[in-house]
Length: 336
Ligand code: TYM
Image 1: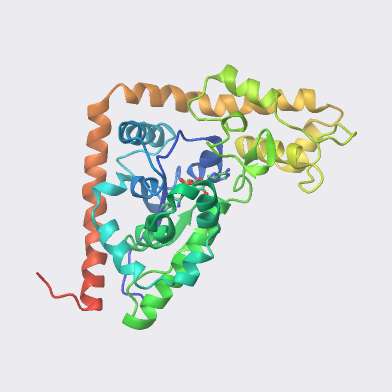
Image 2 (image 1 turned 135 degrees about the vertical axis):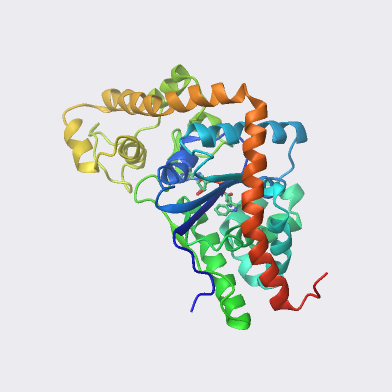
């Protein structure tokens, strides 16, 4: 029997404030965080401790953290209904992260594709934190006894490792952790770069990446320049293998409008890419416009954003501490 029994199921997720939030973050993750607060207990955080696995400029990190909080709220996460917090404000993450490091195997960490990718990109700084990152991510999730973790496809492997760590720990000490499930959307879980549909959209390739705070004219320019496929048919058809560029644009359009691929094919039948690309751009601009405007408004009120961070950290700490106490007891630490 689970020791943890709560009336509502719990959702938890986080994003690193390592760069400006982009359409991949929004469609793969954040869009699925919104509007759930009545049904779930929702915890969303800014993963700043993960961010320093890659060298950061301290002033930029501080600024981006507050900006990202403004964007969380602007996307529709009401701080009165969702617990919004900064990871480094809740010391229990680091503490449980250390314990879980001791229950995570070298071989498991070596297999993580994000570690392999990031160490290839940062050959001069392959630090211990980059390697043990998934144990901290497991701590982020397990501290809150989360049921569901809404993330994009690239975090699936980390979520599976979290489950393995939880099951291993529970196997030794009894039911300490709830074993969480990843929650990955059907469309939008893997948004690809607009100018290179073989790579996922990421801030490291800004020309193919649409940022939430970007000006409409810049967004439209990127969509008009998006790479479509070099087949001769010039028709809007979902075929990720042979038409990765158009299929990616269709996924984006589907995700922002809620239309199915079939409906999109019908809507644009007889139209070429020259009509389709700006239509996708327009649909994205309309979804992002209110977010950008609201985030800009919120950013003018730093005191409010700081108060959201403070009260979120207090609520998060309360829940996290309960789990940490239990873990410390189970592993045999002497109470202070
Ligand atoms: P991060 O910060 O790289 O990305 C944040 C979220 O955005 C999703 N995402 C995408 N989805 C679709 N298409 C894309 N191109 C795309 N790019 C990013 C990611 O899947 C993710 O959901 N390790 C995590 C942060 C983290 C976390 C956690 C998440 C730390 N602790 C605990 C959940 C629970 C990360 O680096 O995500």
